[in-house]
Length: 244
Image 1 (cartoon, helix red, strand yellow):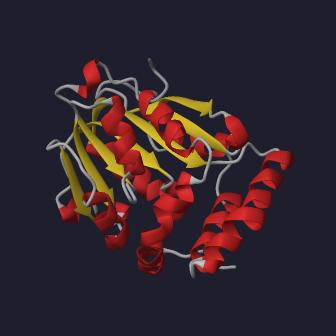
Image 2: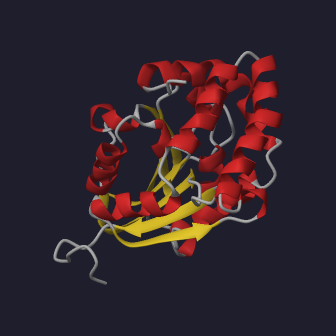
């Protein structure tokens, strides 16, 4: 199948927004894994005085993970889907959380242009048409030594991990999503993982796009070898990539 992109993908997420939280709640470890990846940003003092960008916030699960780990940070949560963002914004948030409707490729046009201390991106990069362009934009938005954590379905490259992912999608996720009228979106989400970078390939992509201290960190449970946290840092202005 052809993967969904840009406005077509945003529209599919708009349609699925009403049932999205129910589906992800049935995924063991979904929310705890997001919190683990948020902690891997390594931000101290509850994020006090820091600005953090939640890129691709969906219905706010990643935003909630950040808010629980760094409750004192100023969090800007961005998504391309108006439907998903409406669901997110309707939830209870502290005053330091704001939401912006914008594709990841058009952040500057939406006024998302300040120097952030950290960027968190969950389930985003495999869904954009030009991941390198988005990584370059993220790098430009980070302050020197700013941190990046990408929480993503990036397969290990092992055949058994790919087989588990496909079995879960075909046996559980797709039948439910199809019954809800969102089969096309979830078929895209299944294929988007299979056709995207492995964890090691994505880490290399991050490094090539000007980040250093790149690490691939596993997540536990059934998602072992399927979902990873990739952490990185924008070098200081006088550093070259690879220097510590």
